[in-house]
Image (cartoon, rainbow, N blue to C red; front, side, top):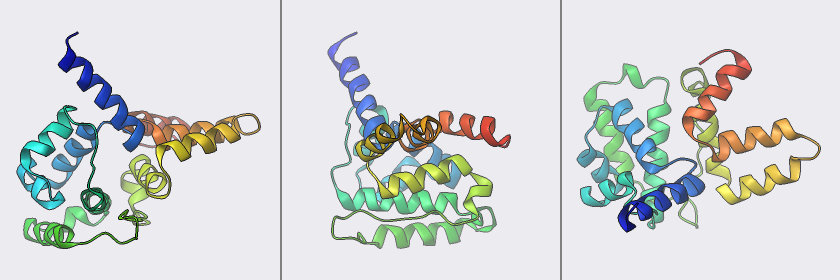
Length: 181
């Protein structure tokens, strides 16, 4: 493997550590769910289209602007809204425009979000991931899981799977555990 491929692999691993999964997976899910283009998503987030592409492909690892991360969480919250399917394209566009104009909601620049309560019926694993990732960093989730390992290994595994794991793994765990998608 050459240097570029090594860097992309390293960046994707860092993204999974920092954001719970590679950003390309998160962005592709949003593009599909909202029916928008990469250029539109970049505009909503406040990124240039090339920067979004670099984050998606792993050529860049980190979202360094807290406002961009704040808007990403807001877009994910919209995508998890159980009423999304009833919204017109114009209504979705209006909601995305409001997100684009939104400023960070805490002094650290991080958006503190809880997915809508009914989102659990539509995307339960992703809703739980969003909740955990909104309240703790990947390192904090791992520290909490490590503290639980000895006495509560199943709970520690849930923290790791949903807090720091890939969405596909969380969805598979949810289906195995509760017998639903």
